[in-house]
Length: 267
Image (cartoon, rainbow, N blue to C red; front, side, top):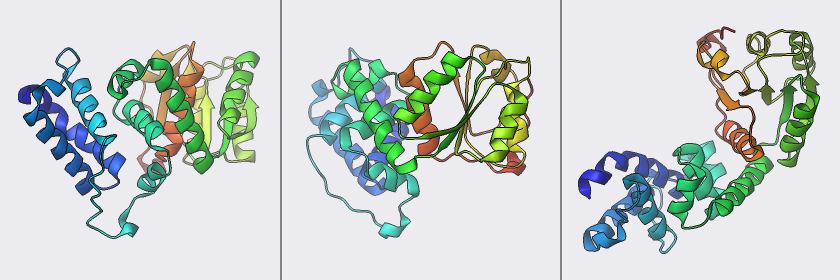
């Protein structure tokens, strides 16, 4: 068992820190988890993937007791992300971190939290709404299919954001961007007049750093080029819950790269 879980401990420490607010408190929960497993190895479900089983044991312990360790440093040392995490209710916070940060699928997160997948989806949706209440922003949608644009608009407005413009071409996108700088861009790659969403985004990012989520049926055009951070990718056809989760992730962690560090994307 020790060999099975050892490679996953650094990631569990990351997860624990995000939940507890400090590394000291998070490490205390990780240590308590290891002590529990030493005392009763049967708590480690060997029928599961080792990482899933380890996190499942940790979450079970986390939800059952409170070690009450405080940060070693002053409260002012807490990061913006720490403070935002603390304001999300406990179970949605766990589901959000498991999927958005730790990279578990909804099915794996369901095993860890001992709930069904529908419950995980509902928890992530709730986390997204709580995050949106903190980081509500203006959104520019670059999409040439009217029905898809309307659907995306409904999704982001349902999370509490405001759509400031919907553009169908490169020229329209840049014009809308210059008129009112958004806090997030959702962009297709292949636009109505044959122009490139990648080119439009590159032109925008030349003057203003903003998170970008590409929603496209042509992911290879993005993946084979050099893309700047922060850029996220959703492949069409998409699931609304996926869009909600990625929007929340992009805004929550405020991944804004400096202009001088941005490579250009190639269509």
